[in-house]
Length: 422
Image (cartoon, rainbow, N blue to C red; front, side, top):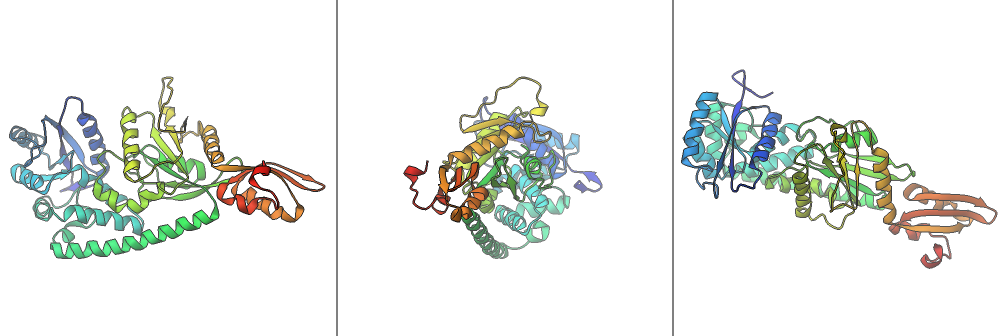
């Protein structure tokens, strides 16, 4: 837990509601969870109804006076605004309130900095932080000299924030070069997977929907999973053998969230793009969350921004063990949807059947007699396809199977064309 002078940092959350129909209250509740994950305590919330954010101070003069009183009464050490602040808004609020001023973007970046464990993740987080902080150096310096540490200061930290813009620009260029090398490595890995003919399923979803728990349940991956936002950050790929015997690679991805900072989207693009190159999208949804529909919308919106389209989608409504009411799931964007509990294992069989059904739709059916001299092709079918029937006869081996379309040419019996194979 982050501490300042042996006390937990206390913050007040601030949001601007632009209409009576928006979800500012729900967004602040989520921000409260983010702040808790970052190690601080929320001691108050303030929402101002406005036609638009105040260009200079985010909220109006009256709310600033209200915040001053709340900060004194609640002994708050800072405020966190629910939207990304401009440099001017951040500086003006700090001058008015004389406490640390943070925004949603900074809190998310702070959590990512704490959770990144691989070299790739650390590069991506630092790059996002430096781009965000590049235009906010003066304001950050004042806040840090006053409060010393706490949330919003992980990663590059005070020393790097004091670097001049020229040094930060140089560091960003260096990180971009390192990230370019990482991207090349990812592309090589994807090419190798493509040549192996093993299909890839990308597990996507809102943060804390249960993606890592699902991967652990399916493959025994042993990924750290906790009931917190962004509990895991670095993507993990594991091999899974389906009931039919076919192998599939399952790739966990970074969780999505509303108002996901564009700095993070850009820095993590190579990681997030795993979904673009996958054969199946597994959309994990926390069915017990009251904001389920809004979270699903955020996921699909983020996928669209990443250019993920024309992919078969299986929506996995998770955490049904937390639900008491009879409930019928719906997702008009999905090709299939199932109800499961990744924690208890309920519904996993139906889930795997859905995965096999989607894979089968992407395959070519073979029903043919193989001469014994071509028995090696059946091994390929067994490894990369779905062998439905295999019968040894005097004149050869009769096989009925489904194989990936790109593999069909390699496993087709000699003298057999696509028209007479079925």
